[in-house]
Length: 252
Image 1 (spheres, rainbow, N blue to C red):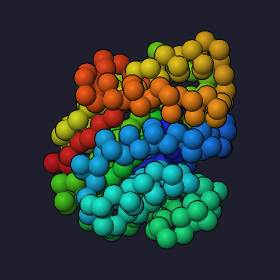
Image 2: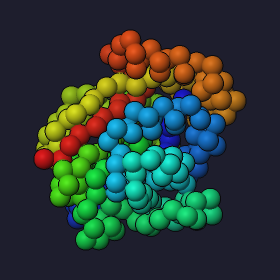
Image 3: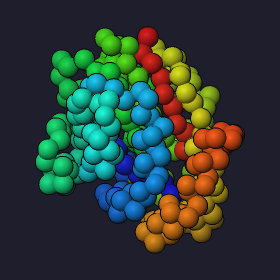
Image 4: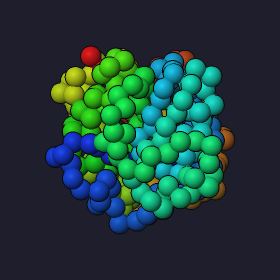
């Protein structure tokens, strides 16, 4: 399964196009993400050690991850940023108690007092991804804060559904390390995530060329398979490949 949170972002003047402007669809399968309860909890748990005090989520979609961040005891304030107006409308209906900025990271204005920035399945939607990371660094530099990044991995499984969602690319470790270095981040954590999902993505979306998620299949994977896979990845061995890449980096 694929955590398709949303799009987002950057702030550099060099990135003037609307984030996710290459997408040919607008739903982003939020119903599938809703079904992935264990997946979302595991992802937040991976990032929790770095989520403290003031946190901004860039590319928040309809708030499925934002609400989880807000429940973390060490988080004093969370602000969501989302560029798509239709997603903002849903966000406000479902999470009226949370602060939402309609726009990109640059629309945070002169607020540079952040301790962490969460960016889940967003960077692949941005053509100038290096400029996006540099903007994230500007937001985090004052507090030497952390960026918590989650992106689709391995270009060899790039599929038609990736194009539908407006993905410019999938990532590997070396590419992310280069981007972080260029944006003045020190990598704290960089690991592949969900090795079984790699094969599921390849089979469903590259071999069978499916163009949507099956919610029942996502629910089954999330309840019956993913918890065991994630336990293995966390306690025994981080995999040498996976459906996604999880990264934490500190602004220097």
